[in-house]
Image 1 (cartoon, helix red, strand yellow):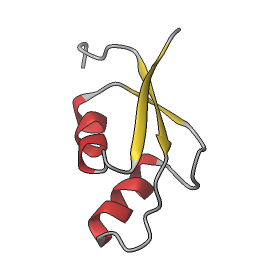
Image 2 (cartoon, helix red, strand yellow; image 1 turned 90 degrees about the horizontal axis):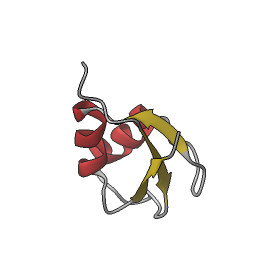
Image 3 (spheres, one colour; image 1 turned 60 degrees about the vertical axis):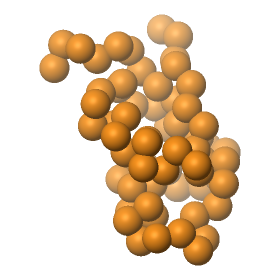
Image 4 (cartoon, one colour; image 1 turned 90 degrees about the vertical axis):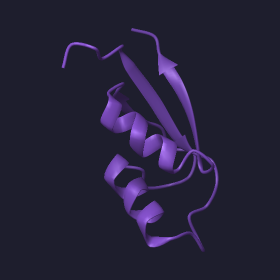
Length: 65
């Protein structure tokens, strides 16, 4: 898909303890393993959708290339 606008850095800032199973699975699918450890993904609609689902647990920033 050609509409990717670079990369985004996703950092978990709140715990997943006590959250629904689908939110925990979304964090795992994003590759987030621990708090405050950034992961970098392409800024695609699929990734943005997953981030939206767990937006209350993560912080997102654009990566300057």
